[in-house]
Amino acid sequence: MVATAKRRGGLRHTQRLVPAPFWKKLALWLACASAVAILLSIAVSQILLALALAALLLSGLPLRWPRIAIPLALFLGWTLVALAFSPDPRFGLPSVRKMVVVYWMLLIVYSSVRTIAEAKWLVLAWIAVGTITAGRGLFQFAADVAGARAAHTDFYHFYIADRIRGFMSHWMTFSGEELYILLLVAAFPLFAPDIGKWRWLWVPCALIVGISLILSNTRSVWIAAIVAGFYLLWEWRKWAAAAMPVLLALGLLAAPAAIQERALSLVWPHGGTDSNGHRIIVWRTGWQMIKAHPMLGVGPEEIRKKAVFDAYLPADIHYPLPDGDYQHLHSIYIHYAAECGVPPALFLTAALLMALLDFRRALGALPPGRSDRRFLLQAGIATVIGTMVSGIAEKNLGDSEVLTMFLAIMCLGYLAVKPSDEQGVSLTG
Image (cartoon, rainbow, N blue to C red):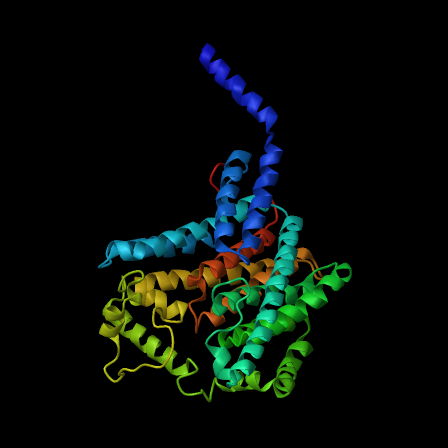
């Protein structure tokens, strides 16, 4: 009894030294820092994520999951089953483990960020840091232009194999993250209530992020930005959406030759330099995998093995293949169906559609006019649209950095669906 009393007294003494509000604030700051740091370093982001989880557990806050966690849990669960039946489970284990770690972002951000004001500050921090990374990309582009001139070579072919990437290791990661920054920047002046005092921040950020995304030469992200941007303009003023194609056409006419070439390569590719033929090949090969293994796929990460890929290569395709990355199938819908089976691909698609429907339903319940909730919901919808469109031609959610940011934005959208302490799935009562 005495020992128990001493332990309880020690616990109360510790709680007095470090009160619960401290842990709540610490969990919030660490969760936001992790979400923002993903624009700079995945290692730093995940260290902060682990610290945020520890602070969250010490804070006493209820542990909550947004509704999108249900189909995503089914997606992860089926992926683990596919791993268990894979011909080489040890080969696929590291990537699956990494994926599971990233999905903790749903719990940590949704449990730690509890007010609309906190969510808005997180968005502003994203925009600020995203602008810095975009600015770094502009300097990289200038260096590439100088490098092409020094090498006396054609800039298009010089640049296409090594484009701007900000602080990331690959241009696809950079452009995927900057797509989300651009959509947040675009949604803010259209739907947020207090844009006047932020105009000094919004205008330069929009210009820097927009230009960097254009110079990234990432066509799938260009198309995603256009479709999601059209949606935002349509929701704001329909005449603005109707004017968008005209402005895009004029912009393309005024664009540098390298940008025009890249846009036209969608229909007139530069032989093997552009990835048009490469993508057709990986999609057709993925379809052969799906037909052969519709329920469990060929196994997580098995596609990366050349022998596995070649085993499903259609008979009418022969080496040498066009230039490109053949370690994944450049489509979230085809890749996950081929790798882990059709069910997880359906669960992932269901998660995206669920978020769209939940956010649209919440918009319908809002009073007319600008509000921070409307801004977060519209930004969330645009993010899902951009992800679904770019995911047709790229395995965007297979990139840990892009996935991390996507999940965090979804948390803010679900916070705006029902901004109260009762939202989400509580694990602690």
